[in-house]
Amino acid sequence: MMYSRRRMLQTAGAGFGMLGLTGSLQAAGKLTEQGGLHHAPKAKRVIFLFMNGAPSHVDTFDPKPALKKYEGQQPSGKLYKKPGEGAGFMSSPFEFKAHGQNGVVMSELFPNLAQCADDLTVIRSMHTDVPNHEPGLLMMNCGNLQPIRPCLGSWASYGLGSENANLPAFVALCPGRPVVGPQLWSNSFLPGEHQGVSVDTNELDVTKLIANIKHPSLSERDQRKQLDLLLALNRRHAQQRQNEGILEEQIKAMELAFKMQSEATDAFDVQHEDEKTRRMYGDTVFGQSCLLARRLVERGVRMVQVYYVTKNGKQPWDTHSNNNQKHRELCADSDRATAALLSDLKARGLLDDTLVIWSGEFGRTPYSQLGKDKNIEKAGRDHHHTGFTTLMAGGGIKGGFTYGATDEFGMNAVENRVHVHDLHATILHQLGIDHEQLTYRYSGRDFRLTDIHGKVVHDIIA
Image (tube, rainbow, N blue to C red; front, side, top):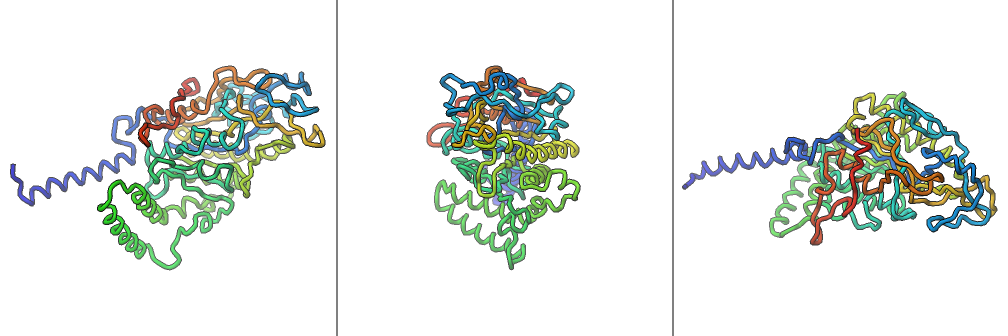
């Protein structure tokens, strides 16, 4: 059949419109009956509160009375590190109590979080592969011990897209550069648009929080003209070459940077909150970062990671010495901010479809680690990977629920064991994603976050 020029343009024009509509629907997650996903999601967004350095599970959420009974005795077994002369099992000085309707047990270090007990699932049977920070951080963030894979947030961005075209899908709030650094929020071989946007939260003044968010002299209209010219040149360059993936990523990054000018200054400015709300979270970097995380997810950011690290990038929860005193200080800050976040999300009707995770990269030993002075009063705890605790709340997870168990000393996960791969599979499942089907072909094979591992922990899902 012969088409006139006008008929051809009319037909093609309608097709181009559908292409634009398809892109919009995909970004909004509405291409299929389940919202463009593998199944109906129970969570739309994730906030991961990362306790960098690894909290002690036996001092926080996993009470072990046997440690008092065997206080000072030398542990044995191939998984036990030699604790040093004079060291041995070390009990927790903190009192544990049951809270909420279902009696969720936690230490006295969490008086505020105790009020949220009915919203929590406490997984006491977590375990990972290596008790060292670098591989532990990479496993918890990227599902691999080496810095070669995309992180959880990038996979979520790749699978879900963005709910807000003017903000990134994935933001990492980090006041210092932790061990491993940017690889923890890296897109790796995924397209560059899924890279986490890292924000240094040491300075919460929005003009300093996001570098160069406003042009010093040009208006938005003039910037748009400049960007359009640059995009036209880049498109011409791309048409003459094949598979210019890096160029496409740069084009999208520039577009996002331009769009962020219209919304980021509001979204990232915690000063827009009233004084009562800011005070509820606590006047600390971590507390205000949690508040910022809430502001971001309610504006459509899919994944926000809040790293609890120091300004110089050190890991505060890495308590090789003064374990008890440091946990008093660290838990006071984390407790207040975490409880405020859960309460605030719940009050705003966001907790039901916002998945909140609280965890470190592993746990700490049930036995002591002594310094050169052999002072037991200043004893620490070493790294420990075969049993630790992770908290989850919201996003379709059961509330007031304790899952799994470690042995009588807190050494090994022995009941309903949950590996990091299982945690990742469960997080993706709550977002409507089958972790076995979310794949990306790279270097001749299909990759996924959980590699060839991982099972959804259905027992903790409401």
